[in-house]
Amino acid sequence: MSKDTNEIARLLSRHALAVCQTYLPNGRKTGNHWIIGNLSGDKGRSMHVRLHGSDYGPGAAGKWSDKATGEHGDLLDIIAAANGGISFPETLDEARRFLSLPRPNPPPPATSFLPSEHAAKAMRLFRSGKNLHGTQAERYLRSRAITASLEYEALRFHPNCYYREDDDAPLQAFPALLAAITDLSGTLTGVNRTWLDPATPALASILDPRRAMGRMIGHGVRFGVAHDVLIAGEGLETMLSIRTLLPWIPAVSALTADHLALLRLPLSLRRLYVALDNDPAGDMAWAALSRTARAQGTAAFPLIPALDDWNGDLRQLGFAASRDLALAQLHPDDIAPVLSPLNQSAPGEESPIPARGTA
Image (cartoon, rainbow, N blue to C red; front, side, top):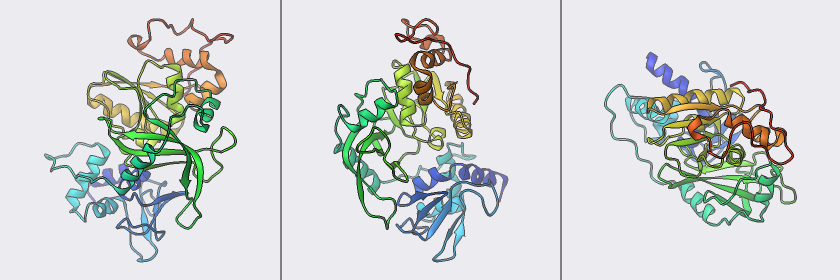
């Protein structure tokens, strides 16, 4: 392969889960593999795609094999098959589009994706939800020290949301927090489900209590409408913690580090803050998204928690200390006039600024 093709394959391997969710949406994550019927995207368990591994070689992320046919390949094969067996140059162009990379030549017409069955199901599920007030979803979020308003169009509650561990497992139902995934225009493209324990304010005791359906790439769960300033981050709990601390700045949850790295940004943005998780995946997401922001003329700044993430800070360090740490990392133009980083504490709380974490 050419140097350019090798680099595209390497970058795709670092986003193997996102590639599978986009081009093989009928599959399911099980451990370190995406499980699906075949390369055509049918439901089943014959084809396994490795999600984590080295960049190259037999154990690389993105390598797949089909036990029924003996076929094997990489993520470029998956992209080609999902687009009707397009040519290799067209496959590379589609991979560049997915990775938000510039094309070496004028681009051909963009591949159009028709609304999928998953997106339609996501819309029906979200419409069946109700307001969070007084529900198990509200109790769960409040137990995470999130005191921000939950009156968002993006959040709903379902008392009996179906869950199946895999295709052969029995169907179960749990209460669930539903979060609408939307594009920059506000169009719903998918729904994230967080299944909850029916009796306690906690996640349900199941293998995978968080799952998304529909199209996630580039999109997110939005809290407020961004114009010139936006805070972007990973999980819902993290971004609702940020809304608790900095409620005047719009925010978006991309749900995972992989999807945060691929988030599409409004062209009107002047400043982007990335609320990092303090781990290697957070570093990767910051590097990719800040590069995207700078390429479109947007200044990018990290918001670094003292502990693992901003919800951990809020729960363990308290509101005042967490807010002071966040305020200390904002551009002066983004600090609300009534606040200062050092003199605003919640009643009964001290407000030392904890040492910054590392990104």
